[in-house]
Amino acid sequence: MITDDVLEQAAAWHAAGRKVALATVVSTWGSSPRPVGSQLAVDEGGAMAGSVSGGCIEGAVVDEALKSMQDGEPRLLTFGVSDEMAWEVGLACGGTVQVYVEPVE
Image (cartoon, rainbow, N blue to C red; front, side, top):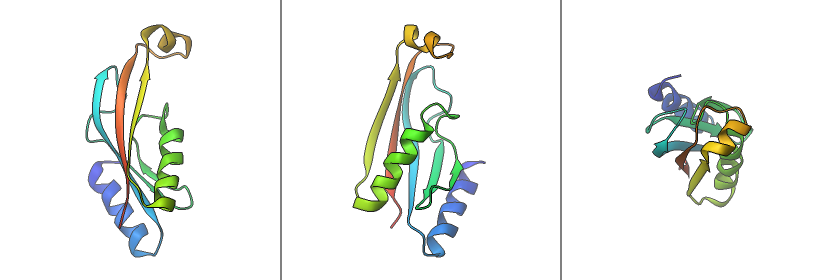
């Protein structure tokens, strides 16, 4: 799903009265499965549209998005993995990804 579709889905959920949060990749270093600007929309029931990681950190981002909807506070999340740890979990190489999560008002 491309970014415009993610934003359209977030807007549709919000218009339907659901709480929604939007997560955006704001910086990367080293290996990153998704580029800067990639987005993930999450509704209060845990439905998702888009992707910020291709799966490897998505669960943690969804958890933080749900918390953000509850307390109304944005979050800047940083995920990183060393080259050595990356091999242990089956990734090609390490890297760092920063994801900004914000509730949609």
